[in-house]
Length: 74
Image 1 (cartoon, rainbow, N blue to C red):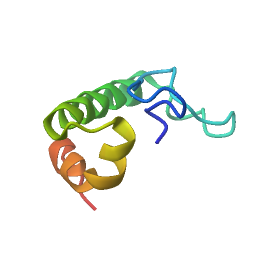
Image 2: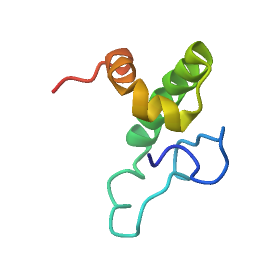
Image 3: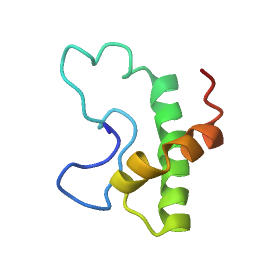
């Protein structure tokens, strides 16, 4: 949820402009993590197009497919 806008329907962001509190900013602002956010955002954008969905809808209804695409393992 930190990679899409809460008030602009089709806006996603990656890198140091993502949404978090000052408490959680320490680790995610590292460049490798920012790069991975870009990869995840790109895959999410592809799913938005594939399913004709907004980023919020992808995050709610297609999260399993997104996790599979980015290689997420539990």
